[in-house]
Length: 283
Image (cartoon, rainbow, N blue to C red; front, side):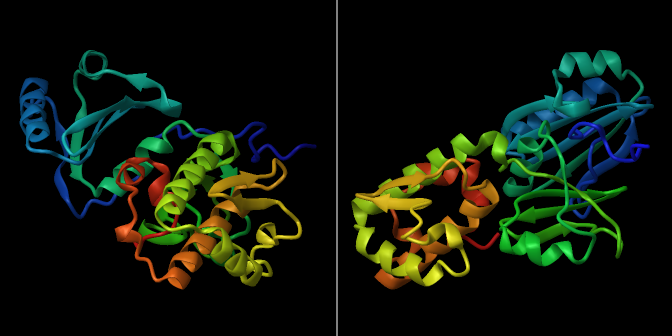
């Protein structure tokens, strides 16, 4: 008989995953006592002040989460990432409990970009999964029961880890589903870097050294190549392979050239959601 505990299709996030409460502005207030009109006025004021964080509202099984980044409302969503607006939430959750929490910009970005992705099983039970996620520069959420941990470019930065011996689900914005977007980001990043500091010769030297750790960088295999600043990635190279490989290669090239990441003319690329997942900076 099939195992009924294993989903027949990739799962979606069906609940508002736990977020760190160390910077909670308020938590689980009833709109019977803190009316929606006051909630709305307060959030409008905070938005004008550049608020970054999350607002949650729930009433029984219904819930909604809204996210702001430096005063800009990214949007609201509910079950499986379905979009909702403010008016709908006020009408649908008239007697809600509400919470407001300040978060870092990277945490907000992680919540927003994983709201509607498909989950996949962790590569092993905890803690055996940890070295695999670190090697892959895993960027996303790890859920195990009620525990939710946040990972930025291979580093666990916040949240509760799974209990020892338990499995988990991974929800990552950087997956095969957005492969094309990831490759475009790396193409733009390497092309911009190459225009300022020609990379080809140094890239060859560094990737030969890294090929044992990252086989897709083997220059004889031609799986991942850089010529004239143009990056090519073969279709059969998984995202989990080329992401950490490209990060290691660029960091190695910049170190060999004596160029600091902060000095590169790539300001616009730092604003793209793929930047934090690239693993080039410490969170």
